[in-house]
Image 1 (tube, rainbow, N blue to C red):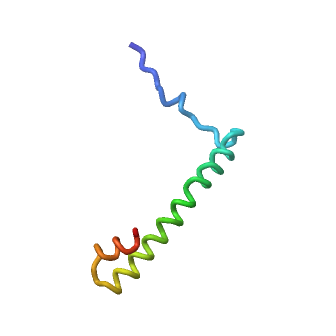
Image 2 (tube, rainbow, N blue to C red; image 1 turned 45 degrees about the vertical axis):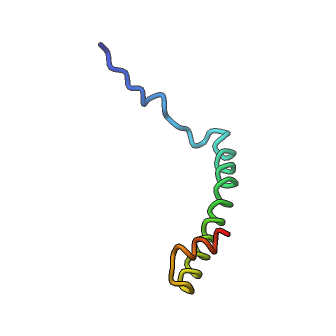
Length: 63
């Protein structure tokens, strides 16, 4: 039984025409999520220092 290396078919070409487009799409979809998450973490940190309770900070920052 000959062994075939199936990883040979998975070679990626970083110079392919669609690579730049794919990276732009990833950036446009992930950056807003990262900004929102960073703002929530900052809010929870500040509210947690004021109230002394993590549960109260989460409730205050999430509405």
